[in-house]
Length: 458
Image 1 (cartoon, one colour):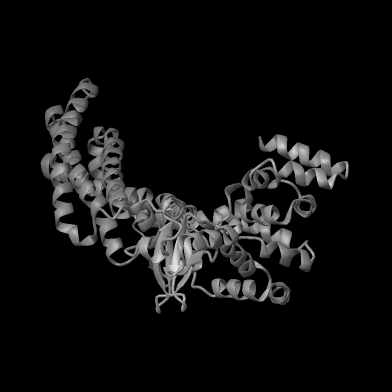
Image 2 (spheres, rainbow, N blue to C red; image 1 turned 180 degrees about the vertical axis):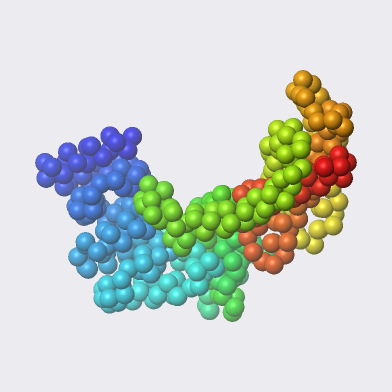
């Protein structure tokens, strides 16, 4: 659909039918319009935004990514930009103000209405990553002594351009949060009743300094549409809506996925197609280079046991099986623990219980996988000529025992590393497949060749 919208807008723009552009855009959501124009050049986007009704234009601007917003802002006249920001949601307007060059943002502030200016300034000063930085000031409040009829009229007047009106917050004269009444309750209750008689007082809330993840988790846990944000004095200063909470959860998942690949996330992470090959290189190379350096230890281990390997070449055939099985078991264990940590199902305080459980799981897997490894050696190497003094049974037992020990150790290591990292307040996703595989490879080689020396006398 976005291609059709884009083509129609370009056609109307080429014909100079600006009024028709406004009427056409009224048929679609602001999100659809933003998707349709996002890939156009900035000059064309500015012309379309100017043609759209100002409230929808502000909404469309808010749906564009922040880099595009800044690019468009620098091409708009200051008066037009100030008008556009005035019609954006407050949190989106504050984000844009923060990203603009300081001279431009400073020159914009006097052009905004006083209330809007103070609102944006307050939001822009919030610490990044907190509920204060995520909240919006677009909400509706009513007084506890209002009748339902009066409150309904206030919502009707204030609500059209607010981000959410499904929850109406009840505040006193000092703006202290007293409770909440839903739009449904407002509609179905007797118009003569007082708001204080029907409001819900035991509501979930967060403070401005709380981490934004707390708001997202609370909204998700209680299936809320929005959650109020209060300051240290208990005054209502903003709300965080479910869509903002979803963005936080998506951001956390993205960071975890990047961490699993040892890709270093950067502030203001750009979309893949907008990042250059060199930027991708800078994000990926630190961990790849460090793991490659760490991998030299594996080469040292192989060099140490070079004589053993030369005496019994069959050992080299089953080294990949050992490394793959250990890596798979470790990664599987690590992934399960990272997920449980992310969902708050476990904490580092459960360390010994978790390790005990993973150890037992590893033992059970090692029995089955060790047996399969032994059968594999017997079946695949039955025709192999072995040096004098070695039998295929003995070699098979050694390899299956090494693999069994590797399964147990890699499972335990895979569970231990995320718990330790979480305990020191770092992101557990940083201990993921590449680093874990490197560690498991080294331990696997030590186990493999140490057992070969011990059991086979190499």
